[in-house]
Image: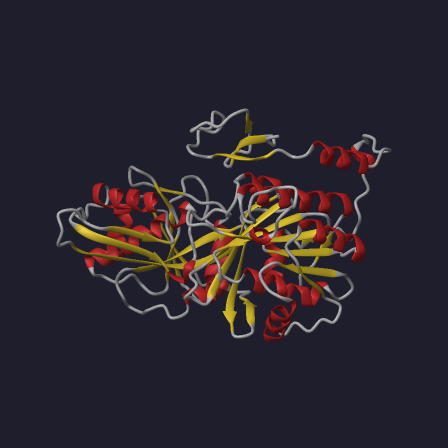
Length: 454
């Protein structure tokens, strides 16, 4: 007898009675996959195991424990999580292979295992290999429990026997459920194993960390619905050849999604970088055209970043355009504004834009710094080394104000800068900071004339 199968979309998770080339719910092409349907007795057993005296309750009846959050021992990770990991939450840590996901989670075991029971489940390494890596990282906690297993049922049995407070699964692509016939790492297996971990976290209050690899498109390998099932999605960003790593929250039900954590990959693991501005500006060239400093807000933290630009005459019919660390479409928009409103004939020049340190800027407050860096490179005139530019650029070349200006100015003054170019405010007084000289400009042309001509 042929087993019953179901079809569902890997992008939105909706189920369909038959296969189709295009999902009618989200519009994605070639996203419908087939997998065996869950057994009826399994669903019945799950229902039978549920507590029968479960009843609805009012919001006031819900008791919140004072020790709701668990500190990981790393301030940068706690910042991104919103103050620590929430008990009973499911946290997904994603990133490219070799970026430092396993290193980060093994390091936090040193602190969490002091007073709490931690179970580290690895499907990619043996117990011996895991101990060798722990010795290299300086993790010597005798109370840390480790298990080399890929069978999801055996992992759940181990959790029932040891009752851990924190469970770490490394990685979700190596785990499999015997009830699903597909291979480990497939869409069905990843979805089923994540559902099992989610039920474990919600029913027993165990904090679960799951490691997931990133595919070529930059998304978590497996169904897109995986990101909707978890409480928090953390992404490790950065070039593997560089030493700095940036941890960013793409989703967080218990905190902000705008915070970032900065780490440096050292010989003995990841080291926190409490002052990312100083790190990102280290080695900045002096009196060199094509560089300008911007101040962007990453959550509640102002960060100074260096934006570099190189504009040179092209030898091709169509000029090359490259942007690294700044949205490509945003960079092309700024190039068009610079030529049309700034009066610079840059249409026949190759343009290369780069944000130093592996930081990705998506805030419009960096527009003015990017425009000034491009104009400085085109004119071959350096921008003063002690100047920071803040402002959003509109399509008509006007400069718009940004939020958190007073906090940005305080961060700029702490790092030894003396001049700040800001958008002109109409009817509002600019905050004053000792040691800072503010230059108010209303348009891109005015900013270029003030810095590169006068």
